Image 1 (cartoon, rainbow over the protein chains, first blue to last red):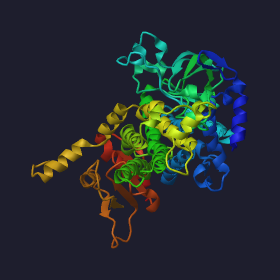
Image 2 (image 1 turned 180 degrees about the vertical axis):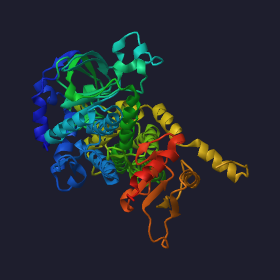
Image 3 (image 1 turned 30 degrees about the horizontal axis):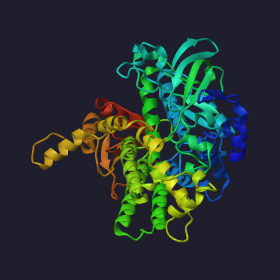
Image 4 (image 1 turned 120 degrees about the vertical axis):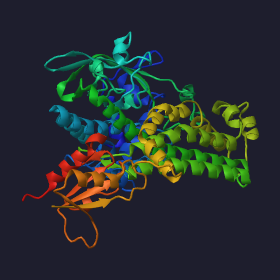
Length: 482
Length: 98
């Protein structure tokens, strides 16, 4: 396993091509760039805590391939207990960072690919699973961070991949030879990609036989020839060039640091190809990845919401209205919503099932409900936090004003709360609430791990409505056949 | 050969396991399906009938099990129309050699 320091150093050894605001960032300087370092710091917590005895029960696991102790983010779930520990680990990490630490995407991609390749080989006599196990062992051994790469740009959403006027709007195979394949296209919203070592490419949707070239799953280094990344903007990211107070969460940043990853005719050797043309398994890979990923959200967003609750309650203390009954009621409502998020993630894990590969998989219905809760409840939790905090989180002067020799005294005097709390501390908490409850952070809750409609489609399929109708008809006295 | 049968409890069923059992009995008359109870001294295969994918009856806790969890047999998804046939095939695989 790597420590956080070793992880950061390993990032400097890559020749990754990253563009940010129109300019290429030198690869060695990338982990220190103000727009990126917070995401690196957050991911590095997943490495450091694996060495801390207080957290190793959640942060580490035993590899079923080698028997070695590994970071849990490289593990294939071997039991219901593993699924539950994953959720608890995510909540704990969110409480440490207040943001996204990005490694779950690759974690979920590897778990989804593991089981799908097993079943593909059973049907077609292919050797994808053995190949994937070798890749997995490499990842467990190196403790590399893997970015799960699923979402294609999609172009005209009413058309299938093979119907697009530009064939590159979904990643596809453009060449096959005896050594491997060449892929072209792009992957969007890539969380943690620029501070990962490897990426695991998956199809973005169920596919039909005519989409054969788009049924591709493979692994490649993030700095492979032909790969470039364009880093996305965040609300308030210009503040990262200033002092720490105005950033709110200066050390770890907000959400995952997403980018567009462009694949310009990238060669992938056969030993790293885990699906190539098996369109009938694209849907399985997508739904397994999506369900594993949706499992996470009551854990990670539960922990993030813990920070929002704590910040709101601390702000109430700083403002002198913590004892007001309506404030207590709002805090209690935030707690209720947060624990509901968490409960659903625990539930979909506790009801996990074994797959033919032997690994464990979440209850898909509950996992999708879990993520759908996040698309709604986080907005309510954040609305309540803003209600409690007050309007000054949106009108507050800057850290530079606070520190100005001319006007700092006015900021200090007129933004003070109760005695015993500095204005600077009150401003820090206000900024934390501001950045955690608006802009990029909220959009991530809506669309991360799939937009709400994607979850609705899944749980409407899985809820067994016919059985509910039959049960209701029986109770109503309508004669029905079993 | 005796097939010991255990129902999960059917809290929120995706399949009607009592109906499935009736169909299994009809489709495999050579097999003796018996509900597992304290008075049943012996059975050759344990048939775990979970009514939904959650699969609350875990095979680790039973000897020589065949596990049905909603529309899956031995953890492989099956079509509704082939469920009976797949369960019987799985049971026959687990029967001790005569």
